[in-house]
Length: 361
Image (cartoon, rainbow, N blue to C red):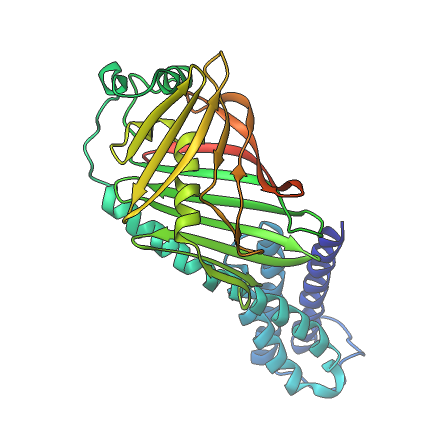
């Protein structure tokens, strides 16, 4: 609610501030008597007042429409407005406050935008790498080396007869928290590339009403987690390669099951509904227990190879999943929880809904 009120307030301030600039245009062209402006304004400057009004009104419109470039228009409009205010300081100085608000919000948005640039560049590089890979169809023969519970799962998901998966794009929403704190809402998108295991996860979170973007980058021999307030001030930064190797394998199991034919995975059947999978990358091997139900659905993923970064301790980690439904032709789980199994009990630190999954995009 606070966020919505703040957005509405910013839109109103920017719109009204823009409309007020029309007074300078009206006075310059003698279209009406403007008693509030006592200093003369030439017609060329009147056109600049009109331009400032239009730019600020467009700023409000772009902000309302969530256009990602709105901040650039806002900075241009606020700077032009302030330059004009200096030429009529006695009459227009109160407008400086509005310009400071507009510039402040725009510069904070610019910080988040620049922070996201590294994510967008990494995505672009990955897409270029896999763009021309030949299409191959996943067949029943590709399943023969897998344990029977995994075969049932892949048939249930519906991967047979469809293209093998070399990349994935997913959109998620949900909430996360740290021990002793409330959940904060988030939206996220991620790109995975499976030829060279890569996970690029970018989230937008809200903590105490403030924008806190975060970028998890798993690529090559390194994995980093970088969270910043407004994309500017570091909140958390860590190197988490082994932990994120577990996360990459988790993504493969939950969101891209067709990749479970990957030769970097070794399997051990524990019983009719349970298997252990070990995934290796860059000399690091992690393992997880996968549990299925009689219908063939994967219902839980448990690993002892993940670290709780906040506590800098290794605890059992699980992601029970449910709410299977069709996503672009595949039966996939669309709700999951991320749980730490502490010695004193379970702690659900994440609740995520998978909104969409697209393969080989």
